[in-house]
Amino acid sequence: MRGPKAYKNFIKGEWVKSRTNKTFEDINPANTDDVVGIFQQSDQRDVNDALNAAAEAYKKWRLVPAPKRGEILYRVAQRIVKDKERLSRDMTREMGKVLVETRGDVQEAIDMTFYMAGEGRRQFGQTIPSELPEKYAMTMRQPLGVCVMITPWNFPMAIPSWKMMPALIMGNTVVVKPATDTPLSVFNLVQIMHEEGIPAGVVNMVTGSGGAVGMPLINDKRVGCISFTGSTEIGRKISEACAPEFKHCHLEMGGKNCIMIMDDANIDLAVDGALWGAFGTTGQRCTASSRIIIHKKVYNKFAAKFVERVKSLKVGDGLDPSIQMGPAVSESQMNSVLDYMRIGKEEDGAKLLCGGGRFTGGKYNKGWFTMPTVFGDVRPGMRIFHEEIFGSVTDLIPAKDYDEAIELANNCAYGLSASIYTQDINLAFRAMRDVYTGIFYVNAPTIGAETHLPFGGTKHTGNGHREACVQALEVFSEWKSVYVDFSGTIQRAQIDNI
Image (cartoon, rainbow, N blue to C red; front, side):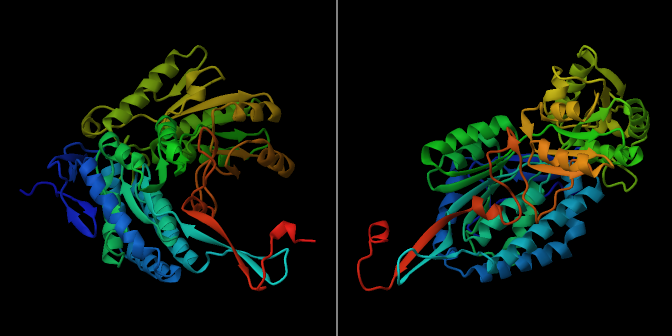
């Protein structure tokens, strides 16, 4: 019987083993007997090789016309379309979320790659009238050099594409470190890029731990930009590491997102939205609907319908098309969620309405399955109100009116996503104004971002940059102002501007 496939790092256009000669296993979270693949446990020597390759390749790649770079990305997008089902099934097997969701993840990579391919012909600057005669003024973008991407496990192809494609279309080169829980999806993406014509050294992939691979990447002076998606704790450390060299630093971190349900809301629609927002991807999204703030007039009605639907969710292996929620991504993530379930049970005043533990027995014994869990009567001051759980847990929070709902929504260290369910258009527009987040929805849950709009948050969620859309180009480029004086004389700007 053949064992699991061994995968290598990708450096300077070649698949190579780590210099450590050590590996780690990528495990299927729905069936721990299934080893998805064997990956390289790299160290700083492999990081140096990748950075050397990227720095050398940058010299030529930055000079490739942006439309030509776009043509390569367009071919990459077409190839991802062709391989979508295979890529989706690989992702479900290594990450656990249900197949319909991994197809959506791959589709995001398709959308982003097509979008950024088009930006090869749309890297617009400005032409500006000079304040002096016979003088021309304009602006243009310029690349940064070597860009490092440290990507998470919950969207293992979408998020790497959000980072890599805008960096590449701007003329940067890339070193990507995938999450150790989901390296295969990044491997698949990089392999397609290689096969569709990305020159050697332009894209490099090094697998391994955050300490052995991530920190050397962050601290290397050859790196012009770090783009990271993950926890606020790690993001803070990355920000501190980037500060001495003034590197571009893009951070996409935590969330504790809320749905506000007003007394005039379509309750059945709100239940549908809250179910999807809270338990899509097993709640393992930075945009998950982990707080549901409900007007007291409809609190009991909503809670009864919602809990009934939550109890009916089918949990299991995401490759089974009948399954609605998959496992936690890893044993450690499962244990973290179970710990928060325990904390919720001990919070004074919170009521466990359903779930609250781990599935056991039969098919569940070989996977990391947590129960869809709902706590009721949650209030500020409780840990489950404030802290990001990143799992299959959500809170129901009563509010006496709109103003208290807004106060509760903003009472949070994070500011990624929020939504409101109401039939009152005036209330909807007030909420758009009053909630301090980077993303807002009306009559929809807190998940569902589209690639042609900027993605990111406020407060402890991020550091002001955005992913996706044209705003992503700001992360991976610098502006240059250019002046051309054809007067034939010295013109001293403001001094001679009479």
